[in-house]
Amino acid sequence: MTDFPSYDLSRFATDPGSAREVDAICRDTGFLVLTGHGVAPDVIANIWAAADAFFAQDPDAKSKVAAPYPGYPYGWLGPNREALAKSKGNDTPPDLKESFNGGPLRVPPHANPDALEFCYQPTLWPDLPGFRTAWEAYYAAMETLAAQIMQVFAVALGREADFFAPFIANPISALRALHYHPTGPAAEKDQQRAGAHTDYGSLTILLPQANRRGLQVQQGDTWVDVPSPPDAFVINIGDLMTLWTGGRWVSTLHRVVAIPDQPARQSLAFFHQPDWDAEIAPLNGGGGADPIRSGPYLMGKFKATGA
Image (tube, rainbow, N blue to C red; front, side, top):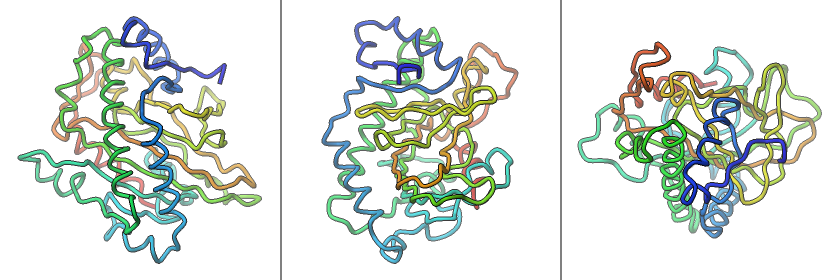
């Protein structure tokens, strides 16, 4: 932890200039440990309990909320159904994980028809006491936290704190609960718990199971372990933020490595994504990239990862 970048979010209110530290981190690794986040402990405890209860079910019970057809974004995605490395053009065996996925809590009026067909599809709720309540409370807390982090990002980039607000009025974010099964003595060649990839959107808020191994970020030719201290999140920027900053910030390749003979591991990943119709163009005209629309870009990336 002492060698890995970190930032105390509670400092920002009294010391906005501290955002310069975030700029330096995002230029270098694009990953940081976030403390001082203010998310209520009971919200975190309840979502962990809900995820534990869901993944403890047998496959038949989980299959009741399985994605009803290929490409449906929400519900249970069982083992051997996804290979994240494919999003980077690498053909690998399926990742050693399963997940439950949910989308936005509200649909804005006059939503784009393509958005209604993709990111605004209904989340498929399991019949477990308290699950939906815990999930929605955590999702709402992550929306609030993501908006706060985007304020830090804006100041870090030399803009007013509310610069990104018009782009994230109706974000098409998703929440994913991940369960990595125990590993055996060896996996298939090139198989990982989550293959090497970059995230697609503006930022990811990851809540890893405390003090569990596996998440790594690539630095040069080296894979560096990302710490998972208690009461902290791991934040990383995605490809869209790299484009938005004209390449100033890096969306770093990362993976969950299949270390032999490890116990089960869980995490919660909130993928923050600007509004469907938000046009993302490099700040100050830098980077030489054409503007893209947030929603169609996300949909294309999602469809590329099917195993």
